[in-house]
Image (tube, rainbow, N blue to C red):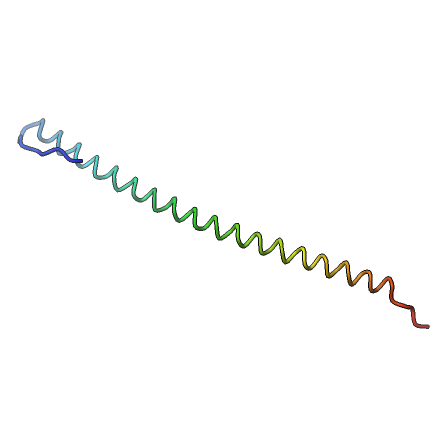
Length: 78
């Protein structure tokens, strides 16, 4: 929203300044929304990566337990 400037006096200067402020605020809000969307996308990627790491860690832990059991149950050769 901008106000049409008709006066060339102090009021016209004030209206022009208000119009500039509104434009700057609009651009700032747009940039914040873009940054927010970028942060949200990064957050989703980090969450997915964390889930994959958790799954891999659980599989490794299971394999480690199995290998420990195999070593314990393995007959000793003399």
